[in-house]
Length: 208
Image (cartoon, rainbow, N blue to C red; front, side, top):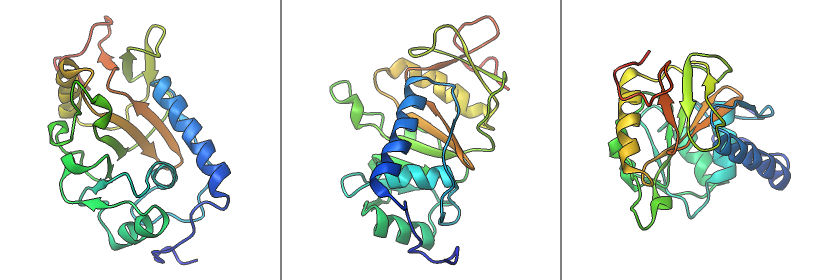
């Protein structure tokens, strides 16, 4: 199968593989800072990596509108999502239940943070980053973390961490992030904050 074929294969066993990927995403979301490996994918529509492709096949369907950033908005991606997921593609970041981001992460306030009554109606961001790996570059605290969780630097801009700290004031509203790199994923749920070396919430004064 050519890697330019927009209707390249999805999962070989859709039920079992989607369930396995869903469990990995759920585990990553409930244990922020942990990195998870997914199996090889037979096809990834450029520029999506294997993890983003697997997550899209698992989480997107005809009831989940998705926004594509300019980098992810290719004919191959649109055709692949239309054929395998049936998800509507929306024009604005705030309109999507999900967003697929393969380039520079837009400002977080462009996405739907949900409402106090329905915080679950927010946008979930699937963000391709430089790396998803264990490390001690970023310290996280919050629900699902016993003390402090450490993760390698994914390459998110300083401005992201400032916006992330500011968004904490909106909780339970906010956005959740699924970070992907090649075959790996990690999650930043809205309830988690980055902390500095002293264990206090980072508010933009200390970022990489």
